[in-house]
Length: 345
Length: 164
Image (cartoon, rainbow over all chains, first blue to last red; front, side):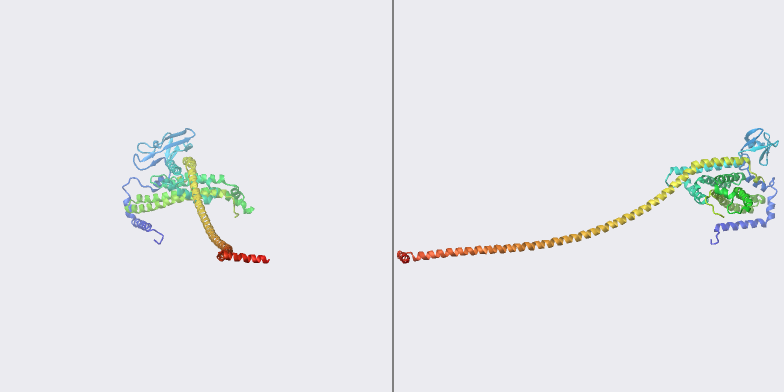
């Protein structure tokens, strides 16, 4: 109690440690039971990549009905827009085949003759994005309805669950970082926070897509913050970049390019942080699960399950922290761009 | 490496969907929610202020009451003392009046008594005169009842007159 660990956590840690000892002490035994009976060699890297990367079908479980084939939307200069199901890339024996002059290789669709192709398909991540957006709309429209229904009264139900979080975002993230003009940016930052938070949490579900851990998603979010920051930047902000106060003229050729690079490194840090944090979490969990399939041992399965459960709890925390951090830094950048009085430093 | 290559499709959809979600939530969720929260915060602030005001008003009323009570008490005190004084004055005045009246009555009585006394004396004097006359008459009647004495007296008077 006094050591800062709760007894349950401590027991869990001890147990995990013992499980690890068991694995490492009996490597031959574990490996011996692992080989032979499966005709396909288990490839951990491929399994992990399959889970964290995007794909044109949503695989839930093995078998005939376990896979949802998503629509493929392609644009190329020759054929224009083409839409078809990704199931066309598979024949009845589940072998990958070419379709309509397009080839499906390593999760990518390319033209057989190698010409330029734009892929706007509803991939697993896009489908998951729709889900996330739908959930956001459904929840927050009903929260807003609660305020209309119970005007001037105490919040109830889903409304009372989200109200403290909305107030937290407003009072602890946005207000202190942006200052008195925070209200203009509040809708964007609230949407950002809940989009990332919901995306992170949904991504932890079994069979879910790695939406917020996809670099395309984080690029878009960081780009929006970049736009908001630089379009609301005032005279002070630009002066600070192109004519940094308090810097001797001789140093300006060095400082100004650094400041200009700084405009881009800020959103870049945002996109990399979210992408890395979420993807790394998924990789850790998947690696620990992969251990079970590599060793095919009861002991490893047991130990691994316990550790994965533990990591999952940490991931719940990370999901929230990353949403907080992304919103907090976005607010900070916007706040710096609209700051009126700039202390000389 | 594929992990680090953003797909153009996902970028497009993410941008589109995020913006749609943003615009819908901004007008249909964040605006009413923020408005309601602000209204509620304002209401709470107002209520607190009103309570504070009411408290102050209460204290003011209490002070007023205290003042009124004090004033009433003073008034009562004053009225009482005034009444007492008036009563005293009246008493004094009555006393003075009474003594004056009784004095006058006494003096009047004295005068009356004096007058009565004089009248009585005068009457007594008249009575004494009449009585004396009567007595004298009776004596005379007694003395001059027979002719001889009357003749003697007349003779006497005549003798006196003849002398003159």
